[in-house]
Length: 335
Image (cartoon, rainbow, N blue to C red):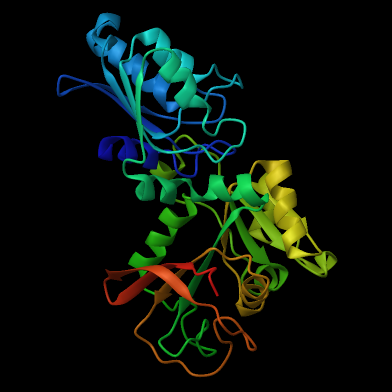
């Protein structure tokens, strides 16, 4: 299952509106084939793994094999045929999957179909690891809202800008390179009109290998005064300008709209403290990534403005990036 999870991670940020899924086929201790869902409309992970096994060992080798999948195999016809039937037709003897499909159209259906075909089924193996990969898809299925990651670069005293006349950057170059990996995880990058006017960010993935198999993320500008946005900002005049959206209004409604209209599963927020505070106050943020620089700058603005309380975090991860520290955690909804 660990190999299947590694396969699934290759699809993060590339599969919306479908979930990233990985699969491997094993028989008598031999890995016959592996695969991952690469893009909506393309074969699902199970069929990629079956095809890989056939190419490597022939169709006969699949008879009596075990399939490990990070998500319950789909059982309905969509843009691609149901994976349950593909596993049955291949002669798979046993199917092991990590977690049930959060899509109500699929959840729980695979077990009955597979067992009726004489296939042994086991589930829940590495469930927590698989669910972490699938969090954006699961949230959309249950709420209609995308998974929202708030990214912040800050000084040790919680400031997000440096005094006038100093460098525009708080964090080191290595941390800024790491942000490219974060952008590659998501389908959309959200910012504020204020940030566009003051910083004119591009909000693109600039590492070519991170763009393989995917488009640039959608860019969403939230502004109460869209008419004042600068026409010469990169978001409106670069080669990805057709992937820039401008919206005004209720934040929750905007996020639901981009899920429906643009098949968005995961949104990264790169903006100032005002928008960050609004998203946190409305409980729209699911995860926070903070890059902390070894600086004490003083002054304003603070990370998330004033007036916030009771935002607690869980599943905390710390990573050293040269002299900076990267902090990543989930928002605790139990408060």
